Image (cartoon, rainbow over the protein chains, first blue to last red):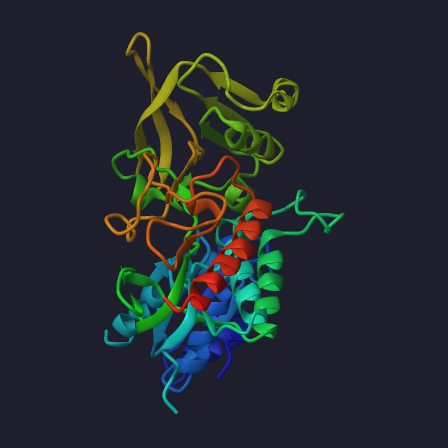
Length: 107
Length: 309
């Protein structure tokens, strides 16, 4: 399943569901964010059965990023049962992202 | 069906040199895999505007150019695996590349691992990266609108970073260990004219001041040893690059700077192993010289494979 672009409302609905959700906070002008996208999308295809992959453009939805205290992008936050369980800033490889996801899911 | 693990050629790194090697290899009928840990483009992917790659008369951003190069190689059958290489056995036959996605084997290997920014080596530098410490003005400059930033370095890229940041930040302080810049002369006048760039000559950054984020830097005068603390929101480190050759050390001949010793033929000290782009010892590191290397490496690899070695 591909990663989906969501807004604040969809974010609130999505994280309160049963399935864990990984959210990528990004912006189009952020080179590091764009660099993450191909591997993030590939992981969404590979692991989409276990968790949902979402993206929030912080330029479009700055309110939710501010509310969550996301100051640096790209930041990935893992949600389980409506609660943030772990986060990582600018992971350096697809493998690093996958290791973060595995560890966060196990929490 | 089991995933293919053996190739005529494996390219380590998906920057411009690696993508071009993959393109030429695929067009030559070789099976070729690019191993890339994150995304195509390498350093180029973080470059906002590339104005010196011929054919793009209006310039192009590095990420888009990288995607185009990758897609072009894939159009002819090149494969990309998002995997980080953990160890290499380049003398083996076939050559073995162990990654976080398993082992891969190849008859020829093109090392296109590129280079990365050199760190200052200060305490807490790594954990403050992204929290005030940055290595790429074009990528991170936007965060410092109206704020005070320090740029360290005296070369052309430090000068270009200071200029770029002067258009975004409120104040830029350029710190250089010598009494004048090594940067190309074309930068001098714009730097002086910017109006919001201060210079701290004969000074080095001796320490990082921080809470959860960077709050300032400690400067040391290299002549007197006197230290002063200055407040800033960001520190941009632009003190050159270092090649990503940790895995090749001990297997391939490197030069004193750690770059892979290979001439214009891209041939390294081991048969069937080629070095292209920024990772190779060469006089000019640019996208155009990297792509040229990629083409040459495939030509040499074809000769090697035809020799039945």
